[in-house]
Image (tube, rainbow, N blue to C red; front, side, top):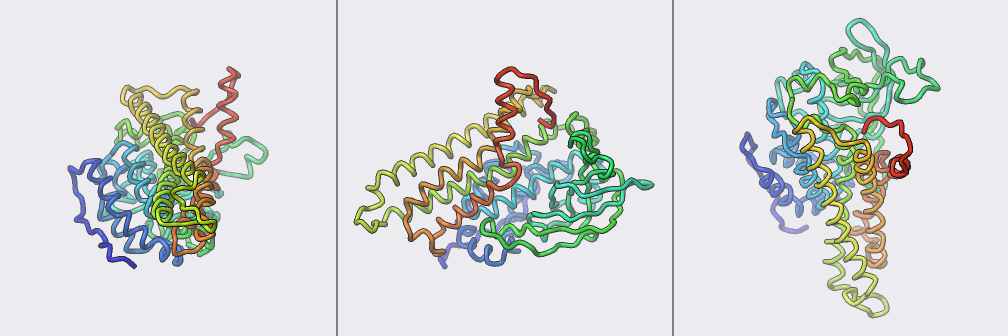
Length: 406
């Protein structure tokens, strides 16, 4: 263990700048890297990590100002997420998944936000969005199901869970024909089941959630058909352009940004290790042409992915500020670019891992941990670029596309 000091922060109230938040995230990189193995062994985000993130004000980046948030550019959220993932990809992943839910809650009927933040605006929300089953009843729905991959659930007071109303009536129909909603459920209504035994992103604590016949008021649901139409209840009280960004574009980035940071962490670890390493054939890593190319390609890829991310969000925000949206072709392009990030990071990481030699397999060196984290991150359903690429490819050919949720 090093003597690296763990950063401490006074809670932020207001007037904070994006630069300050990013600087705070970057100051945490050494302590997160030092703690990463312990966090992986515990298979969850540790309490001290969550405390630091909360005190640094990082979860407030996308939260509405009226609830103590900063309503900042999602590029700021991305910069913070990438920095955290550079220290520990599990922390960056958790931050992206949990942190983006403040943005989602801003789209709900304001009564839902009051339920969550009315007495404590620091409460966090978990997910996931795979569908359970819901049945309409007077005033709302009864809701049941089991959901996997609930990242950071132990630190969340509520969860946003996917559900289909009367699922038996949509058998054989397309997903877009279903009444698919997000259901906002308090912690007391679901059970957390410890199932997170995995080979990467070990520290995220992405457990299962189980609900048996919970009642959810109608105002605590959000119909995805309203999201696709760009007309949600939350716009009445949260009119900022931030909350008019396309849902899929925001969420795709929340599960791909961490891979950029993880690749940067792996590259930094490789450079530190390789600066002194001599291979079994007596060739120093600094003279190994394959290692040099691997470093250059990884660094260039990181730079390119960051530039595209910022360019895309800048354009979407500029359109939203004028009450406009991106075109269908742009949406398809941006979706594909976001979904491609995780696979591309794995591709750029593989030569680094190979060039590090057999010594990289030991846990005393973080190179293998970063590589495993990147491979698991690429398994997320949103990080599957080929379906998005097929749709965009048809559009490039000028073919008619029936597409929604851009």
